[in-house]
Image (cartoon, rainbow, N blue to C red; front, side, top):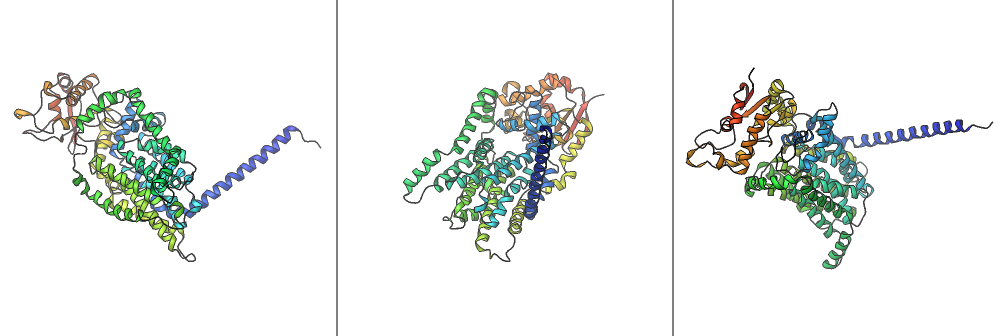
Length: 552
């Protein structure tokens, strides 16, 4: 009996559907098997998942997210929204800001979702780049979970620019190690593009690719005379597309500044030059002696000594450049932290991630050389121990999980509750010299700051020294450009669209100079501010903060 064309198509469709179902079943089974084998090694990273998802969101990440939300809502970046940070981080935060605006998902949840998706992509890219068959069993197991440790063990600094950079750097370093050996790894183009974006987040980060490419140049030279070897390696590097891709990303970014962000060059750069005369405010010695930096140096020095020893022999010779390149990344992160001269945990965190990753790789290779085979611990069990040490360092030397545990009793949580009760979803004028704990309290309350800067830092900078003749405040004609900008815009914005509340910090972060610097007394000298302020009353206090709302 002859089969009709329709019946034949139906049978073929059924067979194809069954084949696809079997294919997906096999893929799911394979994924489950991989996860089952890797679960012990993943546990140290997974223990940090509830920590990074719990409040509080990092204050810098929260402030940047709200600036991007305001930008998306129509305010102009670097005209209505003033910050010295280059525009790329605000551009990237438009993704979670848009998700929060277009879906029921809140802004904080949207930001965390985007960071997790980004970290997952870096993880997948790292797996794609490596030659896992050529690695030792323990090294392979540790490198399988290292991206997860980079993603989650940042703790409270989860989502900061330094964290995003370190995540992008990991697949780039893994690809660079294979490029140094003359190999052409899969995913190197994506790694180069991703690294170009990650390193463009801050000018300080550019030292990482500079040192890494220099390391590739030296590690890739053939044996023999030094100069001819370096020249041969240089010719090969010039044909490598990865460095040129990164340079292309940076060139496009720089070209976009005068075209897309002219106010950044015309307004922000002069303002930043005036404000950041002494970046960070600490001396190099003071930075080196901060407790967290001191601990990071104690971790870094011994692993550097091991990483820069002579090239290993088999079985690690296939990937000999990986430890030195990780060491160079840690050194570049160290130089960036010193250059910024703050001693802040976020600037030290990339040093710790690279140094812990390097220590894990070195330990895994040492174990691979000495494993006895039969009866030896399973590779992923050993990797779990190494990952546990990585996580233990993050816990002992960082701010997580202590901030998360103390969140219900923290000043930020109390301030968030106050704002949620009195100004949930409303516009709030915030007068404070610092962004923590105002952010993330505003984010959790769904409130939006009306201040054009993230804090009153231009005033704090303007009053580092006392005005002459014992006066508390400068007259208008005596003000510098940054101070007059804040004085004028706060008063004009306040009068044009009075906010639902005004949050005032009693500590202005300014020397007393014979009298306390009072924000309200300072701005009431402007007639527009004084007129509208007469319609506000004190509603509540929380710690050093006073909340004012319109009179009934």
